[in-house]
Figure 1 (spheres, rainbow, N blue to C red):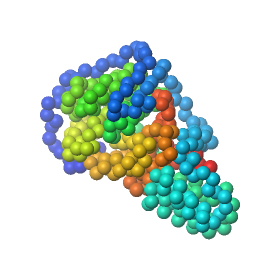
Figure 2 (tube, rainbow, N blue to C red):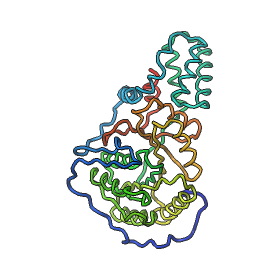
Figure 3 (cartoon, helix red, strand yellow):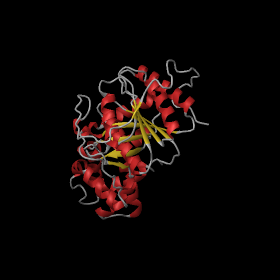
Figure 4 (cartoon, one colour):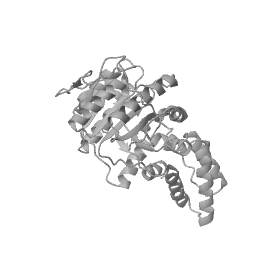
Length: 353
């Protein structure tokens, strides 16, 4: 039996939700290059050009390491050349660099103390060996990434406005399509102006159907109708956008609880994932957002966007260490296929080696 999603379980029916109230619009056969610029969205991350690309999955750890090393260039630059000799100064410099790259004090203390113990226990005197131990420590702090095995799946995408939420939905839709999955989108962010229009552009771009209604509509009604269409069509993955009204936690919690009741009642057999989208460029503010969302909703995993555009990539480690929420995907560029399943060891090697 499917477990409840958010907060206290409710038995009330969702008022005003009737099947057929919302149309499932087929996508256009061709879409010209488009650019959506919204004050609350990252225009750089919204620009899409050309036909949908095929996602090329890195085939091994070496290739993944290379991709992460490229994406983490700005973060790695913070470290400079601190691995000169194995002494107390190395640990002091490492601690400083980890904090500067937004790893956070909790994770930094844990990493440096564990590294010291390992180096001493193993009698390590070469800096390259210290690097290898540091990679191992960071990998262990990050833990294993969550699996993605399912029959039918609903993904609730949450996050504040401006973090690249809409773009991430489009990238995820393309990723699942490339895996041979059928995908549908639900425009559940009916609060923000132009949110539905932006998601429709991505639906057209990726060539997947979208369920939507007008601005100000009941989000749970959109999800209700999307579930009905998903079940009727046998769709594998339903990706639902949600409003990012974190400044009003009560409204956000009420809305997510209402959506939860709809999913629990209408499609309890589906695997649910609540995916939080965070912007890596804001550093510790991303950790604050993760804490705030965790207070109002269940969060299963995280998508960290714009990892290639920041020197604060250490926030990946801070989030896992302090909130115990795993990073599942990372955005590493502007193109539709610039999203990767997060690999902790490849990330650690790309950052340190």
